[in-house]
Image 1 (cartoon, rainbow, N blue to C red):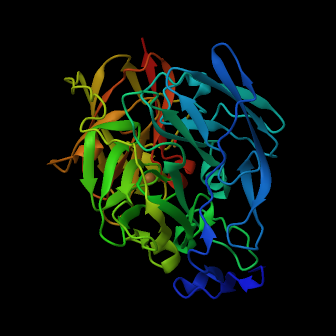
Image 2 (cartoon, rainbow, N blue to C red; image 1 turned 120 degrees about the vertical axis):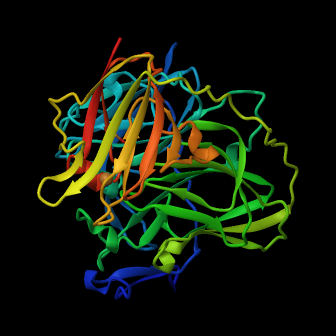
Image 3 (spheres, helix red, strand yellow; image 1 turned 60 degrees about the horizontal axis):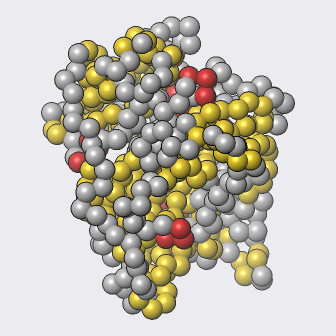
Length: 463
Ligand code: C2O
Ligand code: CU
């Protein structure tokens, strides 16, 4: 496509996975990073802010000059960001203008069953419904996405996801904020030669273009100061291993469900699908004109490796932000009263299974007593085909104890809602069902192609 006479993107024969046909080559770092619009409440009630999301078909400019048909919330790809404040409830009315069902799940949210976006509690075509999010949990980087039964993989791939940030609202924490707090939603995509999203289950081999907030290889101009970056893996399947091209460190502040106990220095951050990392990068030491690339060390093509470039501009800036030595209280681990085994497997005939079973919405897999602490031993049995899996629990945040007997790193300790379970490994997590809500909640593999094919189970929480 041509923009202002300059050719920025051309369809090319895909050299890597050539069997899959033409893909696109984009001139790297020619476009500014779009930051998803913050959704304004359409009404501010006495006890909640009211938001509207319309699920609709639309188009997006994933590569410059090319309109790609996508699914959107409010016409946006990815959807708008909802900025909630701790202690202040939100009501989100979702209208479904698609010809198929949709369901919105607030990933990481501590919400009542009827607002959880359970796969079978969906919004029919032409209908709408209102989800209630109390925001009484810890502040954190959450995201919302489609969860319609068997359709979530395609719907999320086509665009149905967005960020949901719960603000600290603590005057004592002076983390970088406003324009210096930048959400980065990563996912991969496979575009056909005519600029359409190519969708197929297990098509991840062709999804060699990584999008940041919906565009391929953008750049972000940064001032000489600290920035807070919310790294969110919104891909269906792809894990990311992030690092900075100059070897600089990330200061990690938070993981899936909110802040860690204290900041941790990391030179590399691995995020599997649905995992998040809240980090700070300090650009103060660099001269104007310095370019630092955020790389995905596991990318197979340039378009999946050099995912975003930071261009340092301006003079050193006054920076009032503070990264304190302690961030948030981490609840002390409690002694579990129940131990469970969760076996993840793939069977060429029976499909993707949890404890040997495919998802059956009529079946309750585990009954859990509210308030109790459980130890889950999660094993990925797929050593032969080396199928990776993860496990995501709705409603609660948990602590990862260890992986194959090796103590989990600090950033996985708490608060986590999704955990990587590589082939052959056993991961132990400690979950306290500390939500006030009871009812039926799913847990599943967050490789969405797997969950769409029934790699899902559910628990019932009783009082
Ligand atoms: Cu992010 Cu049940 O999913
Ligand atoms: Cu899986």
